[in-house]
Figure 1 (cartoon, rainbow over the protein chains, first blue to last red):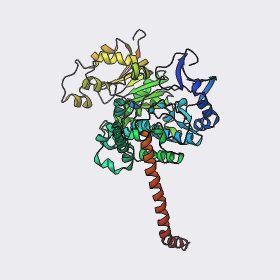
Figure 2 (cartoon, helix red, strand yellow):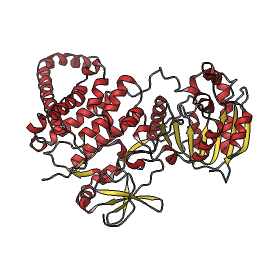
Figure 3 (cartoon, helix red, strand yellow):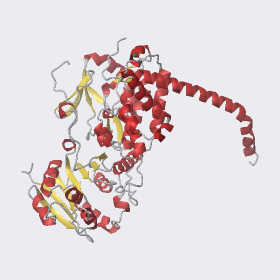
Figure 4 (tube, rainbow over the protein chains, first blue to last red):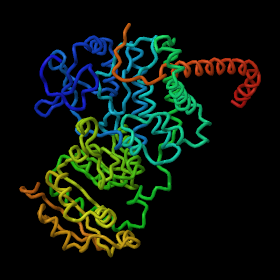
Length: 477
Length: 57
């Protein structure tokens, strides 16, 4: 370390350098020991090629060894991604590996945390992950790649539970020994399972018994570039063969376009919603319970950066696919029919997060990765058709909900109140009659009025639902 | 050359990669061989359709 700079708590692992924040900007400092590898990255043409193909984060060397990378508006973690996001991040990592090998370099780690999202595209952010390639050595990050990318996707392929909970439970990746007993027998029909799961599990077990480890020290294993490329090709094929799409069994995806909610309701709500957002200024928005992103798309049209959150991985996956397609075509393509002519706007960041259980701060000393609450704060928070779920199902009182939304929003809140007489709400309490009472607009307004001023209150025609536009009070939280 | 490793490659990870590469190399060899053998026998059969394709025009 050349200077006494405050390191970011997440950057202690790699001795090649560290991240620090100065005047609200994130910088990356290259350690003297890593200077040669960094120069090779820059001089071999690798950096130029990766940046030109929008695979690696661009940076500016503000002074010798101090890099100012492109500043990312939203930071998310793999435990908040959908299966397609993890798969695309995995394929990006392998694509970068192939290009790096062509330039005489290799990735020394393969964690999904090296990837962030920009305009619905994965972007490799760790400029210091590249080191000189020695063809005689196998890939040091192979195990990490399998455990943190491939194995959660195997589990999802067979059980369709998303990958977010797997990676929340195994932040450093899932070991082969933990995955193997969970995989069904039919998984043995896949050559990839034999090669990347069964074989490592056997080798690790026999290594523990002291046989393999002693017989073959790592340095004596012969390896070459052709073998590494075969391995990468096989990992790519294995990943491409895994299912990530949403199945029809998921109940919430396409809530707005296919459920019994009438088209008239959606149209009336959209009309009121558009009037409300036309009256306010915002550069960023957080859409809670975004579902298929119908309203996130409307927010994005206002050139806002939109974090679209849903606790159903299938919704996040659908929204991510739509956003990725729209980004690659350069036009907006909302998931609902009849709106394909919508103009392109800001960018949508789809994340799979349960608002009643948001991602906690985690990692060493709980400072390595910040909480969802710290990362998700926006000018506008939108909570459409979610209040009844949080209050009636999760038993969150109005007061606590108002407190949390006041933390998440910097200024504006658009929130929909769904009364118990509503078809959707009554379905929630049919078998669960105990919830915080009174549950009515008066009690709702009384609690929210402590922290917000109610600017607009509109009954959605044809329903008993109410749409509110609120502004956070200056003295609130 | 001494390698500076900042992540643990994992017990036996290098051996696993060597075995996988050997298996894949073996499969690749036989796949190539199989295609060569098949193309030797299949070639005469694939010719007539291409000639038929030309006739109508």
